[in-house]
Image 1 (spheres, rainbow, N blue to C red):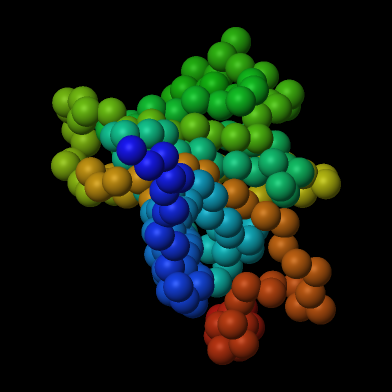
Image 2: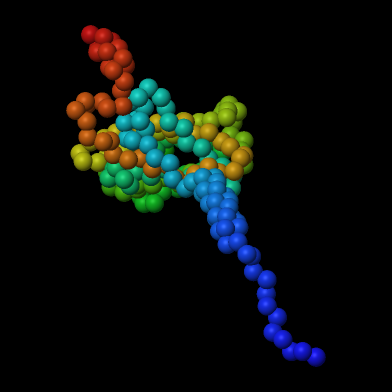
Length: 198
């Protein structure tokens, strides 16, 4: 028997090899891009938008699969007080101490001056039967913060979803410096505000 080493057949034209690897790389990039888009972790909003100064209440969605964070870290503000109008489907947790006054009995229930939280963690739960609360698809979250010697009032429309989570953090950023005192208010809205102030 002849013991001749076998020669592997290689493509005669390296163009096909280059084209094949290029197509494979493009397909992998498209799939990776789609996977990253579906798993976005952060959404951002400017402070003036979160305060509703642009004429709309921002939306904050909570899902069963994971919690949603509302972060004021980027503004340098601390959370002083929080109200959740319908607590039957959402729990709240904070990254530090926060004022815990309930109802008219404020004595010994929290140190509102030394609140130090910057993040609210919202978690969707199975609806609890709370007498007197209507069955709704959303609720209002109100947050009072303080930073740089100023207090701010934020409101968020909290909506509930059963779908796959779209993000896990809504970060509130400080407003971009502007010549206008109200950079989020559209010029037509400013004119209407000045007319109603007369």
